Amino acid sequence: MRIAVLGATGRVGGLLVDHASERGHHVVALVRAPDRFTRPASGRLEIRRADVTSPQHFPALDDVDVVASAIGVRKDDGPGALVAGARVLAARGVRTVWLGALGSGASTGAGGVLYQAIMRMVVGKELVEKAEADHIVLQAGATVLHAPDLGNGPISPRRGVVPLAEYRRPLLPPRISRATVAALMLDEAEAGANGGGIVVPRG
Image 1 (cartoon, rainbow, N blue to C red):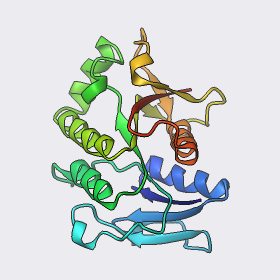
Image 2 (image 1 turned 60 degrees about the vertical axis):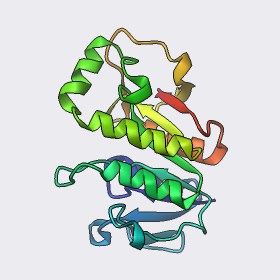
Image 3 (image 1 turned 90 degrees about the vertical axis):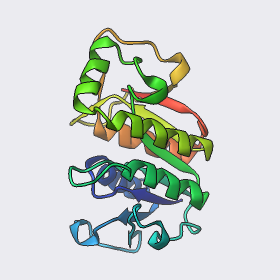
Image 4 (image 1 turned 180 degrees about the vertical axis):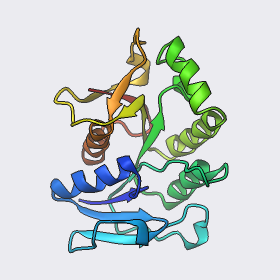
């Protein structure tokens, strides 16, 4: 399978690139600054310059089977980067697995009262943009993973996803490893089981 990774220089995006390569997929790393991407190009790893804020210069994706987007908002990014990324991918018409955030949009409150309070303090105004970006990609048929707080650690052997409507609110603020989320995004990229819906990763 040919899989494009948007946000490949980020912590989840880098794991997506590594895990996809380990699974034998051809990876197209979509990065704004190729000089910051530390993995060398190879027969199974292609690097393409891609800036979602310049959609007219964003590369065509008609040669890939699926895009896994772990795009985030950096401190020097102004508002609108997530929405711009969502619009670019929706316009390309390629199957997409999108990393969202538990506690934004449709999953507001799903992580519990304390978790939601933390999200409002830490993420703040980005919650609105995250919800808008989710809406755009969902309308285009994407699978959106509403991941809780991310940490370090290995891939959980108990990893899985649950549809948002079936997610049971936890007592304590939920947390999951980035490696587990990356593995689940790849699982969805391979299976395509939850298109057009929001799922919550567990593990």
